[in-house]
Image (cartoon, rainbow, N blue to C red):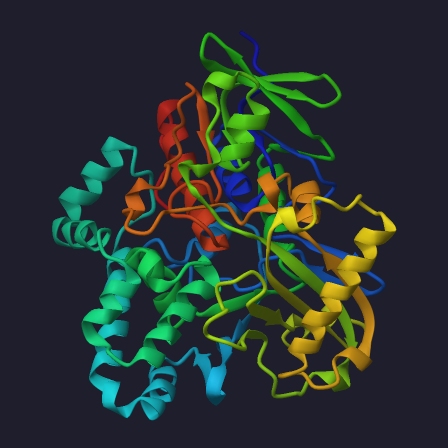
Amino acid sequence: MAYSADVIVIGAGIGGLTAAALLQEKGFATLTFEKNNYPGGSCASFFHRGYTFDVGASVFYGFAEAERSGTLNLHARIFERLGVSLATIPDPVQIHYHLPDGFEVPVFYERERFLSVLISRFPHEEKGIRAFYQELEAVYDILSALPAGSLEDFVHVLQVGVKNPGKTMALAVKTFKSMGETARKYIKDAELLKFVDIESYSWAVQDAVSTPLVNAGICLADRHHGGINYPVGGSGAIPAGLCEGIRKFGGAVELGCDVEEIVLKDGRAEGVRLSNGEVFTAKAVISNATVWDTFNRLIKKTDYNVPEDRFLRAPSWFQLYLGVDAGAVPEDFHVHHVLVDDWERYQELGGTIYISAPSLLDPSLAPVGKHVVHAFVTDEMDRWDNYKKRGSDYKTAKEAYGDSVVQRTEKILPGLADALEVKLFATPLTSQRYLNRYKGSYGPLLYPGQNVLQKPQNRTSVKDLYAVGDSTFPGQGVIAVTYSGVSCASYVSRQLGEPLEYL
């Protein structure tokens, strides 16, 4: 059979682009289709009236020195392999937390400096603080020593286990632990445990008890090693660099091409059908869509449907893209912030405000004398379902809710409302429309108590159909979906007879 490509990738999110780039560099012909006219999905940039806005993601791990081993500096090593240059700017503070009762915690790159902030407020918990964060360091140490690859690849797992038996066993044990349960072994102070919860919630949208320790170790330890680095030009520089690498080795990334259906034949994924009716075939198909979009929308055969409650569905977001006079953002203002008004409400919709001002690091994102401010809160589709898209009632409701978030944000940015030059608001309907995500969701989460290895891997119930992105192990976050892409490329390449060399 004459195939259109060796591998077709549905969606130019970071997981899909990573898989395509590594497979293409290895010599497999890849063809990536993306609905939008720009790549990146939630990790993309858009431009409006001289401002560059991050669509979603703005905190980036994985850019430590490329010569280091392990799984935690994947971006650096991927771009090195592709021969693509991507400039980044180090951020000295991961997140500045503004919490009830005047509790302020800037999470500095220097680990000891960060710990000293906690210890100064909770001197009676110094021993517990150090012990808990050392548990996260232990996870980091293990992952830094193990090469990235597919956990479904028996050869990979065997090789890693034989070469690193102690670390492999230690990591296996830690997969059964949660971040919150581990914290409670060492810490008793209720307010400090709430801080541990918001440390988890800031990226996992779950409290610490519901968050696997391994996931926490990746995000909350690497920030003090590889650190947080912002790509020059905005988050869209990452997918742009991956596309450059794909095309450099002869692959194709087709933008403005919406995949309507995954074509099945005799239980095998044979290719895809676009919304214009064109059909393309491949030896393997990789879906970067959510698990619900893949099996309930792209696959038309209802036998493969996945019930929504098979996973814990994360909420969506209400997002504010603001262009402001520079005077509204103090020079010593940190780039990323989390604002909690009330501990009783932080997990409710809209209860926690996330704020970033990346133009503090990269002034090219805004006109001279201006700054970009991106704020967002959790939200749900059903709060907006009754409005007609682009209708006057919808616009009025967006404006009212957006203005209320701006007003709350003035707690740390006084005068923000009066300094606005540009304000764009996006609801979960926007996320569903532009990102093709089921209900605009942040993706499927594990139920409390589930082992992190119960997260779906890259293989699916359909032969020759694979999955990447936040529906797969290890989960949400740019570095996590990058890992899913590396894992998928590793597995697919072995299935196609040409295994990838380790990064």
